[in-house]
Length: 189
Length: 254
Image 1 (cartoon, helix red, strand yellow):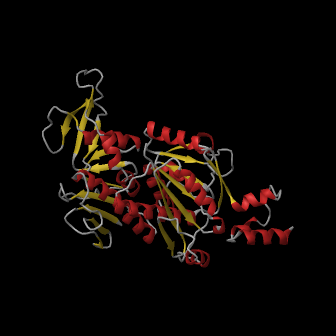
Image 2: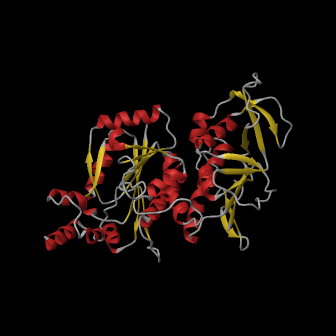
């Protein structure tokens, strides 16, 4: 069984069975209030985190974890990609939108071009159940603490836009550090 | 510094006539922190209901009595089931109140708690903030590699940062409800599987944060009457709910 999670602050929370292999969970404004939230990113982390409650309860009820879990933040993205047909192993995140970064922008000798830093979009991705729990428990309080702009990492490739010469944003740096902490690897679909 | 602590008390309710120990422990924590919220997830059985009707959970922030599942598996399955439920109870409260925690304590309800010094708690909380720990858990003792069982640990009490507690509790599903899990459940090894699957860091709190020590009330009583080794009737003792029943069984066998 596969699960699709939609975060949508304009909708209400619901869980429905789509067919024999798929379930849909929408996390909406009725369960995760949009009031008192500092920003849309704050709501995103709250809703993402809240989804782990419903997901874990479903897994306990069914006595089996979901084989694949897809997340789409409908507030900023569209659900326009399919889950990979192949088996997804733990600690791997797949996304149709990834960005590639290189360290040491001014020193070509030190740049690791064979293994650049890849970060998937936090708004649309798919992974196995264990990895979903890792990503979905990232907290906004840490984003406030650790999100910083680091000049040592510069963008060299973007699957959606033309790569512009720029540093890692606060959000990208936060994901990079937290994914590193949890040993998560990002891949492009 | 402001600190918020959450305590998850979970599992089979036993020895709740000694609930004052938990109240004293909470009051001890309150000497150094701003808020201590207590969450309880226990099986919905006669003993839990009796205590509920006698208002013995009045210091809990939120409580749930869980319907006993039709099929109960061996080992720490029941322990893990209640643990994940207590996590979700806490998370629902956090979602409602917008509250975050600096520290989460997960513990059984049948413990004898020996409280230490306030300054030890103060210095531990200071380290927690200064070192900006994220994915850190504390077990009562070091993980034992000397046992025949792989990574045998104590299941009484666990400390964790909020992030770590959130993940640690979810370990139940990935161990017991995942047929492809590379981890194997064995008695007293589940907590180690939980930290390994999420790459959490572990330290022993009896060395690093000895502001309290925990023992089972049952074990403490046996030690008190000089029954130092596990008696043959330990299995019988595990099934009972009150200290008086423990005393009766010991008397019968002595």
